[in-house]
Image (tube, rainbow, N blue to C red; front, side, top):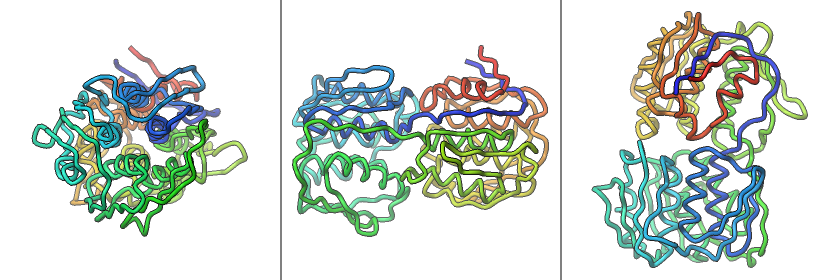
Length: 425
């Protein structure tokens, strides 16, 4: 699929998409909850659909409508020998420890870029938890056989918090009182806050001690029926907010200002860039009629929210001067090596990006050039180029634009709803 986005001004309002981070965690908790769970405002991205498929493979019964999903579960009881997490990094890292609660032999697989993402963590940790594992030197497919037996362990949190999320889920469902997970050098702490918020909302009691250790406390029996509402997605909304800042004003609705999502930090980055922001009762008004004239180069640390790099590069491209974003080391094992991918694709748009160790420097303020860019099969690269196109001197053609389906299926449609000229072919 090709998406062609033309320069233009945006106006109107848009509801943020459902958070796939919240949605996937809700699916996992619903599987682990022995009873019925009603998930409201469910997402429908490819990663969300993969999570729904996985919990069914692991024994849950699912009934879906457009506005809710009912999950009935008796716990982890696999119905077959294999589960496939699609291209979801969170899915593979979260559901693998959960699947290991079963004594069944299970093969865990994925598609696309997930086949190249390292999973050595499980080779190192599972033997200590009584889980047999057979991986391809740390890559998919992975064969496992539990049951996982919680015990006090120490894990490395520097590569990704997603591995820890899976362990926290599995330990909580195992009533692992007395066991402690010690963590060294944890990155992306806000994502762990989200995991803990989901677990605690279902009734499990897990607390952390300065994110260095996690304890599992006694809790009352979980309710037979639980309702969980998936919140709006700050990761997807970050692209809308940046679009509004450079080409608005627009109103973005459906976001929780008290959210634990890491990418809520986009608000601070926008403030650093001097973007006009007004908080109103039913949303966030972003941008002004000068269409980005007030924006300035900014500094921002994205170490704990690396998914913000793509939208912030689109923002920085419009800001005159040199913007510096810290956290490049977190980008290597995404759907693409995002540091290099952003550098390559934005160069086609006339924007120079320097990579200096853990720093990315974007030389912004020059004219964004009309060009044909390649998504590199990375949803966030496709969206970042689509946003930057709003301030270009001509149409920007994005090839392999269907990559957006991984997280934000309606992205180009939402841009069009706000007044952008978008052609899909």
